[in-house]
Amino acid sequence: MLITKTYYDIPTKLDPNGRPIRIFVIAPNVPAYPNAKFPGVVCFSEIYQVTGPVERFAGQIASHGYVVACPSIYHEFEGPEALPYDTEGTDKGNKYKIEKELAAYDEDATLAIDLLCSLKNCNGRIAGLSPLSTYRTYSLTTCAATGMCLGGHLAFRAAFDPRVRASFCWFATDIHSATLGKGKNDNSLVRVRNGDLKGKGELVMVFGKQDTHVPREGRDLIRKTLEDANVTATFLEVQAQHAFIRDEESKGRWDAALTRSLVGVMMEVFERTVGRDMGERVDDGTKIEHVC
Image (cartoon, rainbow, N blue to C red; front, side):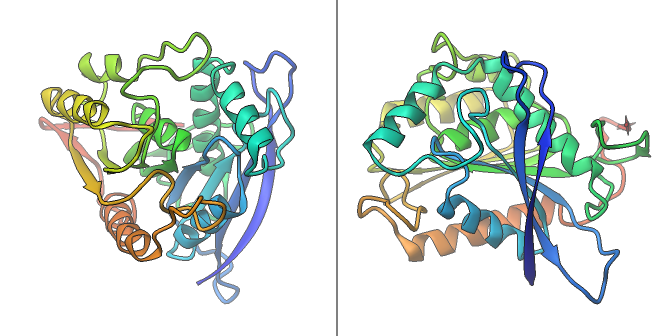
């Protein structure tokens, strides 16, 4: 399936400089069906913003029939351009990662989901309100999230949003150490322990066993916390290093075959959870409806 790329600049409330966030949207292009609609996926980037590898990764998802929104996460500090994969870019990305407010990360995710809700080529089963949308009522929310490295953690946090039915998190950093955001004191695992993911969507965590960013003790902590909280989750540990799905500047860690296999797993999860209209979701006999 062919794809197209565009972007939207969305106003934010928490940016101290009042700058908008740029959200790139990569979507299927089917000229013979101009009114075709597709489910939505938010794709969070690593610390370098929306680089070539991130865009190509999002393009793979879009070509399977999804509208993919890629937010530029460092709009408080930089323009929407990607940071380079070099020492300066890495230092900037790591610096911004712990200077940005945790609430601002969550606002970015909300705005990306809201934007998907407003797009005419999204299937309308994503409930939400954005400055571009009108009030509508739908009986089911279906949106998915994914991301790599920092983006894996952001996809993890996106799962707290009831509109997100599946999050596929690639080698998510800082969850085990609770060091995301300003003050290096995030509450991701605390919220899991408090039950904020129970009864929500499906979560998939993928880690490389040779990943020095998330050691075995950290992976064990994440797994145990999810299991103790009865979260619907799949935990995959593979023979790989950090950033093994990055097809550029991966420092010799890119594993194309393993990436291809795991992308297949991700697409199965997305197809099963958001790729079909399953009707109203029922929990304990109660119909859940969302209004936007």
